Length: 493
Image (cartoon, rainbow, N blue to C red; front, top):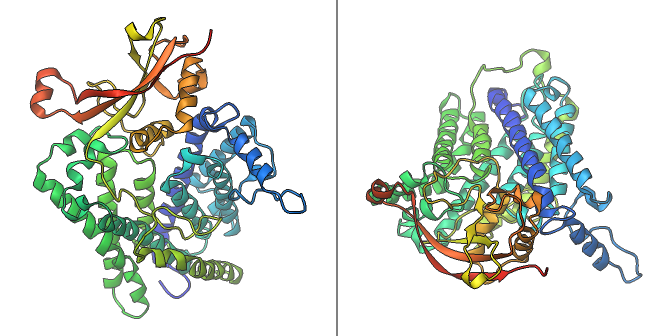
């Protein structure tokens, strides 16, 4: 690494470009499959209604409408939203992401992959900015910021720019150190080392190994928390060690940076193995590779290895932009009231990150049930099954990440609020209507596409079975009913 080009980080660039492309591909596929029933023209929270509302209220004193100032940037400010256009946007995003994964744009001059990544960034931003609560997750802005930075990694014919590689380290630092500070300032369970005695059981979407992780000894869970604090509060500082290589000869600075990256990656792989957090952990693994420098692997050599002057100007401008934009995020890291998953500008760059400042100690599930009987008081009720949420007590939780099941995640948040969200009532109505796009979001429709007479929402307390309980009845979950949350409700006939 020198002041302008980071030749030893060619391997890191290849992983960053292709890894981020894969994540965009997954994000667009997830959107293609779920956006229309959740947010489309007939969705639970229709995006066209949000856009129409924004146009109505954004009016100047002279009576002329301001285009979309209440919304963050989205192409649908200028192009009317339709489900078909949303589909076309997703297919376009999948195509561009697949081309980047194959390395085709990277064969041209640096502006070609730059344009490709910026197209992904703008297209996905257009979706997230009208996605409302179904897209209100930190990993959405993380993907956007990673895609923007990846646009300036350049082509195969030149080494990656030093400034962009360092900006990726800054992104990992904000992500990890921000999450660590959120935990230290958050629930007491992170300070008394008990958080992970509950987390594996109560996390939004457990994975196949979550029960086994939960049943590990208490001393192991305390060690997990200590390891988490080390990995998030101490290790991220060492990601910047390769910069010292500009003044200190030898491999030591690079080895320190690579070791720090390896620790971050290892902790993320443990989270991947024990849960389903969409692409959050996978994205962290990909961007952490940015700190791994390997001399001589794929490094361009000869006259072409020098950065073109115009590209040096472009990447330097990005660096200056980030210095300006990063001040609020830097201040937030050390603020008394730290914000979690916050953006300080309309383009969602240089964001603040963090997750699980508190850990819930018991798992309350909202289960939706329906019946064909005319009288709900004496009815026989049957459950709707979700793909990623606990339901069947014998079923092994499945691994879905990095794919994002948006309905399942929002269902986890329902018991944590003081009232049921508006989308949930609309969801129940869609079940009463046996709306096919909505039913496709589920794992099990107990009525095989027929309309139920009544539906209701019931809360249950779930916990993982002990090893002895599992040997007796082969059930991985134990549950007890708490109360009726909503309903029964039906449609007039």
